[in-house]
Image (cartoon, rainbow, N blue to C red):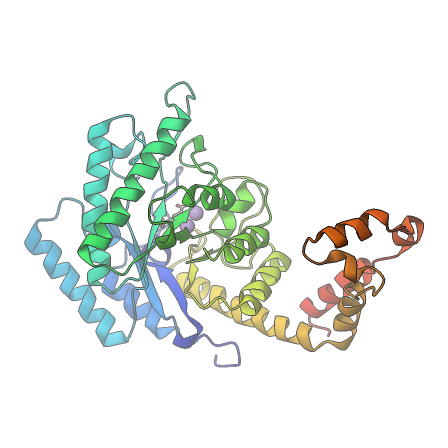
Length: 389
Ligand code: GCO
Ligand code: MN
Ligand code: MN
């Protein structure tokens, strides 16, 4: 079906090899779908209008493959990308599947593991750069604890900082023009992960040697797992100039990471997010870190991927409708109307303004009595989303 919401490469939609390639394994059950090769995933994504495909090193290259095998697989993948016109905007390292990382990677108590994690990441960055990636994601994976006596959180933060400082310096020495994007998650697979929210990451980034090179990769599900509003986290990242990448999916509240099809659970939350991204000027990749229900076969995976992108496009259209809706805009203008009597009191600090503000007589009863019309506003937006405006 072709319509106004059909995804096209210029819409900047990307998927991970691990997302559409997810064979449906979970902690309780075996895979339910055949494993797709990387070139097959490239073909699938190109056929449905995606812009790019992202990967962990191990999504493409088996951990123990020899140099010749790695080269052959990489060349085959590059050929598929070229044949289908797909890009690799982001790459990352799998620092969580190998048993060596059972106690974390950059924050493992074992210095041998910490050093090995750096080596793996350097090699994976080389692969990402070769494939043309501009953003390199760091998701902590197993950087956390179950037993809180096992690891000093100050050590963990220091080790994580040392690792990122080392890698930013190394990238600059290599002449790589790469941005790092840190992805927070509150828990899973560890009981508690370090730097658990996007806000925590934003604070941490300010302590890094090359902080200009480092931003965030917020994920819908991860903030929701912490009971937080995702759009607020994204807004703070944008305000800080740190929204380098984004992981879109959906999540029904605080529980295990569900990685649901975008907009499939909280459609209103997805709308607020899309409206924000479309209106703030974000022009980075729109990456779906989600996977199809375990009930699906290959056709269902395709439905899932198309669904993620279509829902985004439909919600972008709803955002445009909201901008053009006279009644909604009228209420917003009324809510935000200026009060000439107090506007002069609200500028930047001056001693005169502080003195005037200090002396001003506020009619707090009148201020408190004002109805804000949020019920009407929210209902209008609900009706717009339900398709009758
Ligand atoms: C998760 C994470 C991962 C990361 C990926 C890229 O909860 O498993 O969201 O999917 O995004 O490893 O770094
Ligand atoms: Mn996730
Ligand atoms: Mn993610």
